[in-house]
Length: 434
Image (cartoon, rainbow, N blue to C red):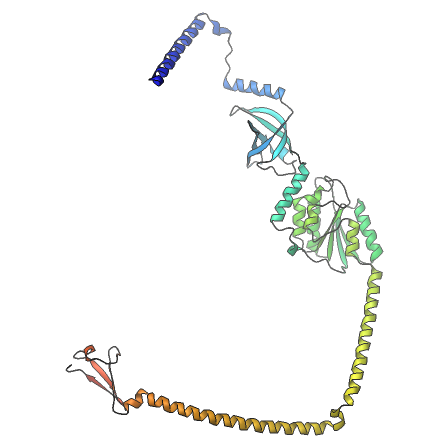
């Protein structure tokens, strides 16, 4: 009854409210008070709200977590920016998206810069993102870690894929800038250590927007011509932004797919780039790369001279050893007695051995023959044919080849075969008796 009473009171109040509202509207119409009231269309009101938001929230920073991420076929990125209590729709158009180094992912905590506007088709406010940064971590550091994790999953850093650096290359390829200090350091080291090597240089930009593409094309160009034994790819030191071309995926894949061993010489310690991790060998500086790949000519000549002396000493020692051994051999019984006498003695020993062997074989053959014939006698005594020769016979049904041991398996008219000691008889059953 309490619930019914409350419902009745609510219905009465609601009915009274409708009657009062209707009365008030009729009063306003009679007084012509609506003539001075502006009535908005939905589009007009939405547009005014959009202009209002645009004037007051044109350049703002918003912090939140990315969720519901989606990328359209046209390349625009849409996501929801949320915190513990609220959420805001966000749109990152293709033109701004190209400038972002890292990959936008669900769950990433970010700071977005842009303007608040209204998407009129749905009457929904949103932020148009012009720039985005990860919260607490620089965009380049995040992009580096994302690409590193991706390539590691694909096996780009596995030791099994690393190629050996040749010990003494005669042709060396270099992919770097002609304007930097790196090329000068590499050439100075090579000229100082081994001046008559062949050098193939592919000049590229190592910094800026097109640098990564040019470096990858330079690596591909050297592989296509296959004129070098090893390749150095690198540049001098710099900031993370300066070295960024060597953290691009296109360069990493070019190094990974290279048939020619690649030495990565980017920056100075402790700088580490994606190229360093993918390359067959990583060295801290371009100079170190040149020193590693090119041995000093004088050192090689000294090594060859030392090896020649060691080989000469070994051969001389072996000759002295065999000379002494030969002299001892000449003094042995074999050479003093005479080879012909020793040969005749050995032939006589062989004849005796053959005679003894023939006797042993004949004895064994006779022994085995006696045992063999004894076994044959035993087998013959147990043979069914031996039993048949004493007047017995074996009868079987011709139809299913069954040995007849009981008259009950036979029927009148069955054809039977009787095996005798000599030959057999085929007959037909005329009568059966127990």
